[in-house]
Amino acid sequence: MRRPRRRRLGWRRIAVAAIAVAALWLVWTRGAATARGDEPDGMVWIPGGEFWMGARDVPERDTVGMLATRDARPIHRVYVDGFWMDTTVVTNADFARFADATGYVTVAERTPRAEDFPGAPPENLVAGSVVFAPPDHRVPLNNYLQWWSYEPGASWRHPEGPGSDLRGRERYPVVQVAYEDAEAYARWARKRLPTEAEWELAARGGLSGKPYVWGDEFRPGGRWMANTHQGQFPMTDTGEDAHVGLAAVGLYPANGYGLYDMAGNVWQWVSDWYRPDYYAQLARQGTLARNPRGPASSFDPDEPSQPKRAMRGGSFLCTDQYCSRYIVGTRGKGEVSSGANHLGFRCVKDAR
Ligand SMILES: [Ca+2]
Image 1 (cartoon, rainbow, N blue to C red):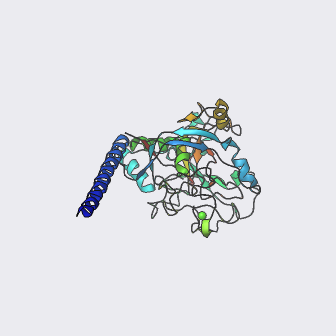
Image 2: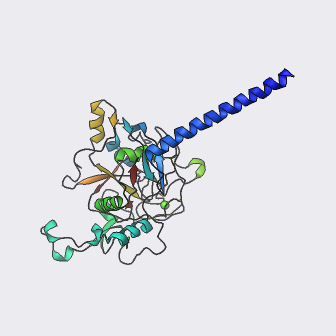
């Protein structure tokens, strides 16, 4: 008679222990959730922590890609607090809600002022922005003006110029936004732009030291993981990855944190000023960089008079022939008042 009773008591103990563990788990997770606040719509929690920041060496053959990553070295240790991040870049539908609510006019929609461009002929002071305009023949890749041109009337509402609009593009990334436009949106949404370190920690999706936000191979199992450029750059975009030019958001697999398009499709503004030697400055300090926010000011030796912010992720124009900056850890830079039709942004939000 005693044996069955002991067995019943044993099961009861296990059940009690299981309930206690579940209760502790609930208390702990509720506590953590309370500390970071309720999950905002369209955002995921990026756990903070330490990581190696910067781009690892790319293959020997990828000469241009290697040049593009020099400013992303040395790889150095960084700590970032946890934060919320938009799962996708800001879409045209999102930006339209902001513009409708506030009447905000973007930089590209404003007529340039003569005092800001001394000496410019009045006929050149026309609102517009920069648009990708591929040549119909092969060109040497040493002058980007061969495939970018200033288009009067181009703006977020007309991404490729007056002949284009947003019909059917509600879920496409908003583009043609200058840095201050992105900041204005973020303020309205009660969010902010990510620091470069936050962006990279999030892009890595919990992986460490990988060349891509999804792992080691560019096309694991033959699958396209991001909207990039195939064909002869810049002349021909063959769209083997299913998209010629820009794609709607969220069409390629999310990374380990549930973030879409952290490589390719559109570049994304981040809040750090750009300096090619910033990582070297941090590495020289020899200590863990905690929540780095970028250098105090911008300096790009290529164009020293232009204030530039960093941008991340690469775009639908990135290719191993020219700019393989879909490689996680690599960096881009942009003059703050300029947009383009391959540049957007996403926002982050602090824990409560
Ligand atoms: Ca593509």
